[in-house]
Amino acid sequence: MAVKSLVNIPVLNLETEMQRWNTIYKVLSEPKPDIESTSRKAVWKKNKSVLWYHPAPEKKYTTPLFLVYSLLNKAYILDISEDGSVIGNLTKKGYDVYLLDWGSPGLEDKDLTLDHYIYDYLEVAVKRALRHSGAKEISLVGYCIGGTLSAILTSFTDLPIKNLILAAVPIDYSDLIVPDKWVKAIQKGTLNFDRFADAYEVIPSEFLYAIFMGLQGFNIGPTINLVTRAHDQKYVDKWRRMDKWMKDAVTFSGAAFKQMFNELYKDNKLVKGEMKIGGQKVDLANIKCSTLVITSTRDELVLESQSLPVMDLISSEDKTYQHVEAGHVSLCLTGMFAFAIDPWLSERSTKVKGI
Image 1 (cartoon, rainbow, N blue to C red):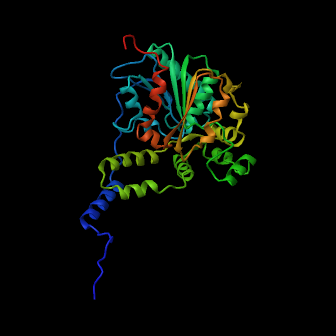
Image 2: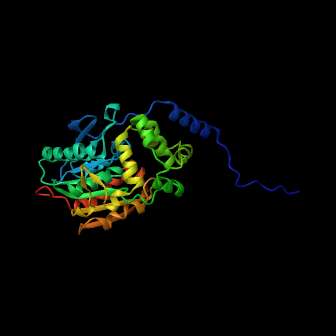
Image 3: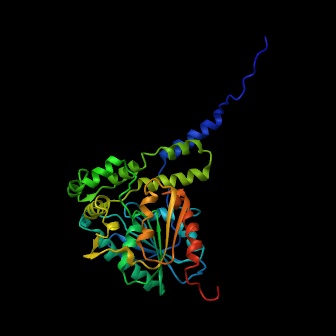
């Protein structure tokens, strides 16, 4: 009797598997990696916040960039590795870059509101960057909630903002990534975090991390990727940095948290033109500078439908919408964001004479 040969049966390589699981054990048990920043110096400080200046090795543009990241996460995702640094890639392309690091509020900061963050921190920091650079104009680049704050500031400030870039920015809160029942509960006020915020006064970092993970559906994809790509040292190094950043959450002022939850998530006041900052009504139609809006195809936190309405709300004649292949975090983690904005930005930034 002829014996059929067995084909297409995977053969377990014990040595390879031992290396794989040794790598995984090492990654999960060893200390988190150190993050080395692109060359920088602090040029302004206020409370917990720091304004960092990253000079271009070979400056090509006299219009500097001012980066504003989310209040809900730490800003070093924009400068997380030598190869994947958004800031590093922008400076290599000839831009001087300023980054506002919001810091992590303490209990003494429980009464900080979005009004304080926009007027007393963001606007003042942009003034400081302009004075430090000696530039006549500046490009404001806001990411996620940092984009929301940047749009609000641009709508009423007298500062010379030449270009505005809004990436993964939540503007319209009528459509959220959470389940529909949650959206209805938020809008009706049956899901409310005021008492929670009042009890804690400053929202714990552990709570914000839980929200961040929950909005992603407690995504196990990164863990699976680590198992399947444990042989790829470059990927493992990137994974360790991402894992450190994700778990390195910030605290959040209770007053700002309530204001953001009620005025944006619940009442959607920004889109309705009902939001007030410092007693002044926010009207996005006042934005007239060149504007670039970027969304990503796999954004697990901010829907495209949350960002797109800003294109109709602003009055800019020069406005561009760009949809890129990336996720909410990977757009920064890979440094891709720098390459996504450079073609548009380079055409709208004043070049150094002789270049």
